[in-house]
Image (cartoon, rainbow, N blue to C red; front, side, top):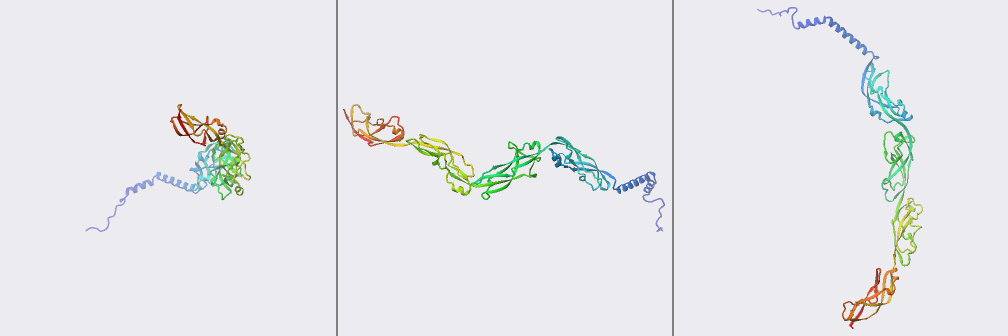
Length: 442
């Protein structure tokens, strides 16, 4: 019969017996006790350091933004930096010794890394060392990379330049820009001497197409641009434009408009005198038929023609006469009229009629075997042509004839023909355009 009580395990036996033995040996060794003592010492030191806020530690800040100080002070001394320092050195790496108490909350910006422009000594190349603020509260900066920058420095000067208003665009029909002016008329330009010395003017562009009859007197703010003597635009962030010490990029332009209309020229008043006898004035040709006149509305309404007080003289002329005639300027005209206009007086020889009576009629082409009897031997001739040609003729210069060539004996109706040596164009009317000719054998 089996015993129901549990069997007793012998002393010194059971699970993890070897592990317990190893641990007992380890904890009882001098090396273990020394290590434990060292660990306790380090822990105690760490607790002591952490609890002492006055102790300092090094901390590294990456990409800390940089600033530039005392630009205005540098300009007041008459200098300006030509380089963009913040483009050359946008940020720095700083190693800082900070207090234990502020280690986790301090940032690189509290040390304010910056370039102080008061370090600049004169024109040319200057090396600026980086500066920063040191605070007993947060610690001190041990190092900074980069620690300097090299810049070019020029003289900072100021000069006054005129404001020039340039007119562009087409003015609306029926209007005339009587006057315009800028306010102010000059501006101050400050900056590097090499740039400021090139500035000749400040230009404001006035667009005439934006003007309106609804605003005959107007004021508008117009942007300006700086130009050199050749009209090239000068642009630089180093140039500063001021008006009475206030920075500006605009000027005010005042405009005055008046109405305008086309007024015809009185061509009849542009010539004087009479052509030579036998010549007539056939027309007056002007280079322009009208001019634009601008004036106040009541004055403009009263002007209907433009005349002259010094017409072209054609007295005794036998041909075209050309010249320039001065225009008479009506009073109260606002715009500038042409001072003179080209004029041509067209003069032609007069066409006249003259009658020649009892002009003999001759026979041409008669066969030698025949004899001719004319029903009329004389006729009246009326000639029309140029005055000089017609009046220079004598009766003897006119030859009337009938051409009997090829005709046989008998009675014939033949035309009377006319011939004048070296004749100019003319027309002829005969009292007997045809006559009867009787031919018989001899």
